[in-house]
Length: 443
Image (tube, rainbow, N blue to C red; front, side):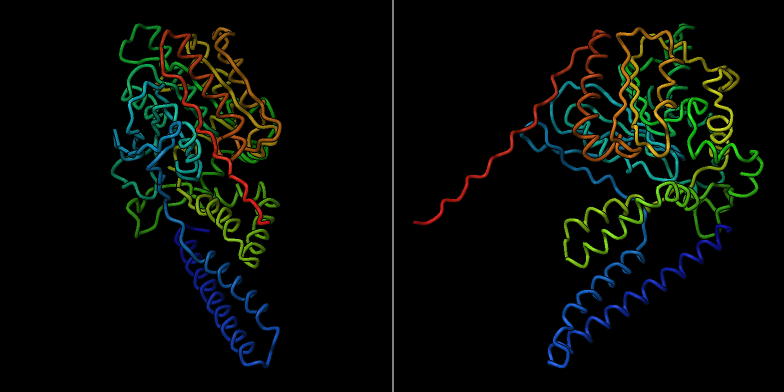
């Protein structure tokens, strides 16, 4: 399906959903009148079903634009502290953002590099929220390729690595870097290149204090996955001919070649179709029972999940070839601007690898491979965590992230800083929850 045909199909679907929503609304109103008239005493329950159907169809019909991070406050200890999302450096394909806290704390600087894999950087909102109380947080916010005019040229894996290195340099020294999913490979590559420059006495680049790689395909030879199998079934030119499309008129990036976000979304959803089917049923049940809290949680997740971003064609094809088909970094064959990337050059950046046993996209062995590649990091600066119950997105969001992974990451970052000779404030203690005083019954 070509891009413009997909747009027409989407508009057609939206019209159908709106029609069904209005039909459900009409049915609900008619059923309420029947109950009120006494002609159909049981019509109220049926009206409730129709109202639930109306809300469901309305939800399917809505657009899903780029979400906002929406983080304007964070609780540090017992105090609610203002947060300002501040652009530090804007480039056509990415904006480096600083989430400034209105407080005086000496906390480690952390750069989060979200993946460019069909979703926006806001998919890591929970990661940002979790880190903010005890860290100075920066995020590389990638642009939707369909909104980048053609005059800005191509954007491939080399340019991605350049953006990561430029962000590290913009923030300054003593930075901790976090890569998630697809971004782990360019994060490791950028860290290795900075270490190689440092070995050449290049004073303009600094090695991160620590590097955390979460659920990433560092070595796709280490274990099989549906994504790896898909990428290796066909030659690279098949992907270029069949999934690369030009952005149609009506968008800023009209004419640019992209891998459309809607194709990536379809692929991701097919990997866990059973889970998404259950979530659909849960949403319908919550709407029927008017459980707004439960339906709100499901809608909040899908508002983010269904908001998709197109990938630059060159970046997508570079990733298919170098990450999934040839595992070039792990095999020692990845180069950047003519320089071979050598993870063994990393010696004084602490390494934390985080994986989930139930990860449906990246098996733990693919991420753990970074430990072997970075063979010259001292054991005291290494840590590997495999969470028994975590799926892919649990690593950076939800209860598993908040309760199990975040405390480990916070401690690791401060231990790495201490090993580098840096001192920081202790992480703030969460404010104690007030217990409710039980009501006394009357005599």
